[in-house]
Structure formats: structure tokens, C-alpha cells
Length: 562
Image (cartoon, rainbow, N blue to C red):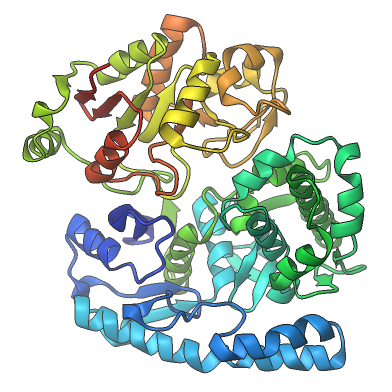
């Protein structure tokens, strides 16, 4: 961030190719310094998102484990679960939490020394920003202050001592109104259920995609016997409660859910999450009188939750922070430090903040890796038109163009693109390239001018980040069939404008000229288990290890033999 303007951002996973990389972001920091041309001495502050350091600091202990460490975790696990809700249980929990604090303080000093020795950052310029304050400031800074009062609601599995907060954003200031400790976390409930079903924690979309398949009648028994009554919104309050420690929800599932159908368990977990979040949002508006809502935190990566929230009649305006997991918390930390220094903050390029490559860099990359000897290499005169032509012929194309997107959602610049009306595209991308579970839906990038054609209730302020879902029209079920949920026929679109991404908008326009369809199937340029590509190396890694036949790097196209 420079003079209050967010200019560059990238996660460590974009450089080490490890999804949700947990170590200190040394490669990302090195790239930021090189790309910006700044020296460490030029930097006024280094903001850290959260009060505990990254895990695996230089091979050291895991400081960010939210519920204790090692022997302490084993010592208290059984007692916490059995005594939770009693006076003794609360005392046990408080003792358990206190064990983390000296380790976190030691970790902060370790990180301070590591950044000073690696880059030369002055130790006195490190700033630590509480986790949910980062989520709140990320939303406020990203969307800006329009003079109205806003609620900022944050919710995730756990961050520092909380999992959910309610904040008022007014006059450029953020005031926390309520918070709930992570022992009652709905995010942990969802994460533990995901793990219980054999899926990877943190990938909300997997459980969410599966949850749409059973009917309410199908999963009602599982909902009643496994999920109902384990957590609730306290009467008259904006805080949650639970009858068990929710980060140990896996123990509850082992006692109550073994032998039940996995899709019923998924649907029941999704239903409980949606219902409690909707109650919470409605009550926050009722108690504060503020109908304008911003959101942040990993739970709001759940687009079906967001769909329910945006459809609440009491919500007047809604802004979902894009890629709102912890990957955007450093943005919130930087925004807060800048605001505290008296700077106005602004975002100019959305999430297009990562690495980019000129045409000469691409050609050097192709030659350096000997790609002309292994693939057909073509220089494209009009990449957008020629990609559109390939997709219209029902080919599948990987695209690297401009700056990489920050976060988990591909927004056209690091995307795999396919014909949205051809279900063969769905199966080819799913089975041969992405290697995803069969129930997982894809999403479309759609020209914003065609939003009313495909969405039953097109959003007043656009939907540029694939962060919420909508019901579809009959036209969408024909034109975008491969890019909507195959069971409930909802869609999670990126509505594209020329102002936000001129080249991608032109590609979609060229495709529409050829097919009459105002969108394409767009999914992240990666293979299962790896992060969304940002660099040329990552794009090539995906191309060489998948069934993808075409990869366009700016104006250079690689093609495999049939």
C-alpha cells in the first residue's frame, strides 16, 4: 500500500505452489519489494494480520493452533468436552486459552527478528492488528466510506479470541458492538463436518456443493438428531452460544452421525449454518437500525449463505468482501495502519494485484524451458478474439493475462475457460483437468449487460467477484448449463464490466458475437490440491499435469498434440 492506495498483493502460495501455505511469506515479501522498487528503509510500517504469527516459523512450533499446543491440548481435550457449559468447564477453557499467550508473544518476537535479518525491516516498524479487526477493515477499505452507516459482520472458524463480530462503520470509524468467542464457532462446526466427511477443511464449496442434492425431507432427521440444539443465537443478543466446544465438533459427530448418509450430513450442516447466520444478520439490523451490511471472514466464502443474506427483506445494501478468508486479512491490517496514520484508503484495481508478465518475458520463459520442442507454439495477433473462437469451437483454454487475481477465485486473468452451454465441457474440465468431485459446480463469467438475461434478480451494484449465488432464468439453464449447479440450478457468477477488466470483457463480447451467449465457463487455473496459478511456472505446471490442451500466456499459445 502506498499513500493509502492498495497497489500490490500476493500470498505465499503464489510462489511456493503450496495451497494455503502456512509459513512466513518470505517469497511474497521479496516479490513485493522487487515489483514496487521499494527498499525496506522506505517502508513506514509492516502490518501483521492477527496477534499470533504464521505457523511453522523457521521450522519452529505451530503458534496459531487455536485451541492449545501439544501436551496441553491432550490434557484438556476430554475435560473441555465433558464439562463445557459448567463453571469448571469455563475455568478449564480459560486456562487452556492462557497457555497460548506466552507462545504467541514469543512467536511475534521470532517473526520480528526473522523479517529484520532477512530483509532489513526495522524491528520497531512491525504492527500487529487483531484478526477480526483485519476482516472488518478489509471490507471497509475495499468498499470505501460512502457517508452512510454500515454494519460490518465478520465470521470465520477462529481468529485470535473470536469467531464472529458485529461492527458499526460510520464516519470513517469502526466500532465493535459485539463478539463471540471461538469456542462457540459455527465455522468450526462446518470445518469439522467437512473433515468428518473425508473432505479437506477450509474448502467450503465442497460440502456446500454436495448439500444441495438431498431434499429438506431427506435430511430432516439428521438435522434434528445431529445438528439442532448444538448452537444458537442468545435471546436478544448478537452473540452465539453452544452446548459443546465447537472446535471439538468432530467428537460430537463421531457420537451421533456415524452411519448416516454423507449427503444428508452435508445438507444438515449447511442448513444450520444458513439459518443461524440469517438470524444473526436480521437481529443485527433490528437492534442497530442499520440496513446496510458489509461482510468478511471465511464463513462468507459460502455463497449459499450469502444468497440467503442478500435476499433478506430488511437488507437494503449488501457488500460481500471478495475472497474474504484470511488471504485478504493483510489488506485489512494495512488499511487499519493507514487509517490510524490519517490516510484515506482506496482500492483502484479490485483484486488484480499479483504478478504480471510482458510479452518479451513470456517469450524468454518459453525459450528458457524449451517449450517449442515439446508443444506447438503460436504467436497470437488478437488473443481475446482467438481464445473466443477456440471456446466457441468447444475447446478448453487456460488463460494468463495481466495481473494475477488475489485469493481463491479466478476472475479471468488466471482462468480455465470453456463453452458454458456444453455439458461435455463440464465433464472434461472436471475429470481430466481439475480432478474434482462429481457434485462440484462450476461458475460462469458473464457480461454485466446480460445479467438480467440470466439472473432472476440481478444485483443493483453488480457481482464482480464470484462471492454470492443467484437463482437462474430459463435462458441461463440453456446457455450456461455447464456453469451452474446441476441440482438446484443456482449460479455463482462473475459479472464482468469493461471498466473492471477491459480485455476479459472483450473476450466475452467476442464469444457472444460468435455464439449469442453472454458468458463462458470460468474456473481457476490449477489442478486439484494446488493454489490458483499466478506465475508462469505455476501455469505451466498446471498445463503439463492435466488434460488441458491449450494455454495462452499473454499473446503466446501453447498447444499439445491431440
